[in-house]
Length: 408
Ligand SMILES: Cc1cc2nc3c(=O)[nH]c(=O)nc-3n(C[C@H](O)[C@H](O)[C@H](O)COP(=O)(O)OP(=O)(O)OC[C@H]3O[C@@H](n4cnc5c(N)ncnc54)[C@H](O)[C@@H]3O)c2cc1C
Image (cartoon, rainbow, N blue to C red; front, side, top):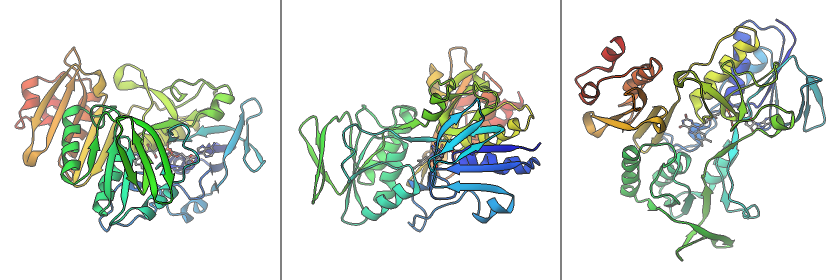
């Protein structure tokens, strides 16, 4: 197949799609256009603590490898408009390019607190440049306030503590990680943060935020004031859908795609954090995920489908988070469960199996040191995909190997 494939968004998903096109033998033009100045890089390390404490950019692929396989990477310029009728996109610098197929891999951006745009000491974390700004401020004797007890805020809190920064987390909900993580796992995380010296304020509303030469001041609704050198807002992300919406593509909590990552326009695909898609393992329930592995796999699947090889995306949602020496993992959709069964593992690690009202395993989660739960969660993903109904007593007992449930 020849012609031109344009990929909008040079993140993990876009980069994986571009290389997959070449790996599958596509000989046409591949243009990867990204609004960031950097070549595609991984975001997970931006909030985590490297062994040596340093922050460096982790490229998805060596910069030279793009030109080596004929991928044209255009960095530092956004696509501002899509014209599906003329099969063209307009770039921020005024250029117009035509495509045969277009992949939208534009990711998501941090949700902002309204009215704080003019404050320079209130920031968000999504890009390498954001992470550099935060690293410039944190360190011994410095104070960081984090609004939002979600993954990014908590990982950043752990990193800041390792770098001897004072940290306060301000969360409006009654517990941390309330949106996506079972309470039993979240409470381990909360206890560990408190043990490490993080001040965790729950059910805390923000009345206002001000800044002056001395720093930034959080004024809480209950009258408390928190002074910090920097405030990081980590209250979730919003998918980048605007140019797709303006082009008339179907939107449903993200750019809506089918199992083949195809949008409502036959020649336009979408993948990664910007899209919502039907989940094969849950009878087509539509979700949007913000997950590294999903973005990578969907980029590859979108590429294959753009080449005309019909291949559905069949992944089970999976996410991990590293905080201190703990790793938590979640597979599937715990929100669908009505019952949770717990299995104790060695060294304080545990697994939770989440069952729906028919006893089907719809999700599994857990927490442990290092990769203690990694293999078991991988097996749970297979059990979830296979729509199994394991017996509760087998799930509780560590002597029942999960692999044997799969075989059954
Ligand atoms: C700090 C941090 C830590 C994370 N940690 C984890 C983790 O531990 N585990 C996990 O599973 N996931 C984690 N994630 C999530 C994971 O990184 C994302 O799911 C993944 O990056 C999504 O990839 P993507 O390519 O879809 O989108 P993105 O990585 O957001 O890339 C999209 C790119 O498109 C660009 N773009 C947007 N609009 C346009 C336009 N109009 N024209 C051109 N370019 C455009 C953006 O600037 C961006 O560079 C983390 C994310 C962050 C921010």
